[in-house]
Image (tube, rainbow, N blue to C red; front, side):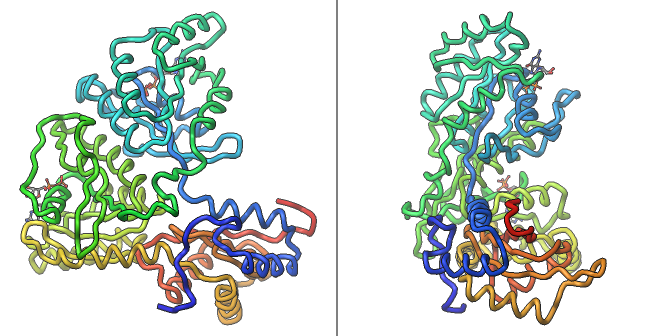
Length: 489
Ligand code: GDP
Ligand code: GDP
């Protein structure tokens, strides 16, 4: 690897740019007629890094999904009409008052699948593990129930900041019912109507106060400590088998359905001379046997584990066709911007025919992570276990790679000269200059004279990968089109 490329150490004052590089970059921007404050804003945004996470929890039917829909301003987290239908997607990006954060929606878990107490306990477990703050939703028209009280105890133990949301306060008449929720001992109840939007702005202001700027406890640059790995994959791909293999332990069978916070949720495992933190191993070892609940539990666990991890090892059952569920897990990890390794497990079962079809499936179904290091393993026989660590190291290295601005612009200049953007409507949009504003994952900002087509952006990404590596990491590229001097957007 080229020695001019360094590892990014995090979020400095000017994105990942040092002082000298920043000055050089601003000069480039000024030459091309970009407003400095606009360029500063773009750099900040590109270097936003991991977002803080808000978990929305509460009993079934208190309005969690309605609230999530209101916050993200879409009907994406559909309030299901059919009971028992579970959702796959559990995390969403949201923005309020100019600050971005992630929402974890626990509303998809039907109470009759696990029983209400188990379901609530499991939610609280995820709130503890994945969230930086919790919005605890209570139905003000019902008042505090025993289950609500149980949640309060779990939240206390967790010690995360909590915003108490008194929902279904559709008008002033219900305010008194909201006030009764002071009795929960979680501080001020914030009366809202998730359905009509009443009070949600004030409540979100409180949420922003509760959320840290960035989840520093997970990604702090000074943190050091073991790197964090999430083992993810759909049920039965062999996650617990693999975990047991690497941990050299007997298979652990846990009978309890729902989470018990007594379990140590992460595990430190020494591999290849290095200690790694496998996050949420408790979640892997827990087996949820009820069919419908199992899928939803799996999605929640996946989302939570990814949030906590730096690198995701995605297990795929090589003996089975690659499914929509596999792809969804891949997409979740890519969208979260984590380093990725793909482990094709159960390799011991493959015959020549299956192997042939598997390769075809990988090409068509997993093209979006063609850049991820791949290992063909068997948790049963131990085949190629020793290849796991080098693959993880490669992915983390790609994730942290940073190309200095000078180097990047020399490269962009070559691209523009050798492969100019096609002429469109008599004009030829051109990349003017760019910078890598952040790492973990690599984030680029390109400034251009006109709109760059998706195909050209893909070409640029491909060339970036050819030139600089970035193995095992998603890359963000945002393109800013030059406006007339003086205009700021
Ligand atoms: P979840 O199970 O906690 O996710 O609850 P849902 O979001 O699915 O909401 C349960 C029911 O309560 C739905 O029929 C919603 O329309 C209704 N609901 C949610 N928020 C409000 C509200 O602010 N006011 C009223 N009147 N009904 C609400
Ligand atoms: P999880 O749900 O992802 O944790 O999957 P498990 O580890 O519980 O494995 C599911 C099933 O696949 C079990 O019956 C395992 O014995 C089996 N299994 C796991 N890894 C392998 C493997 O490498 N080869 C074979 N043949 N079976 C495996």
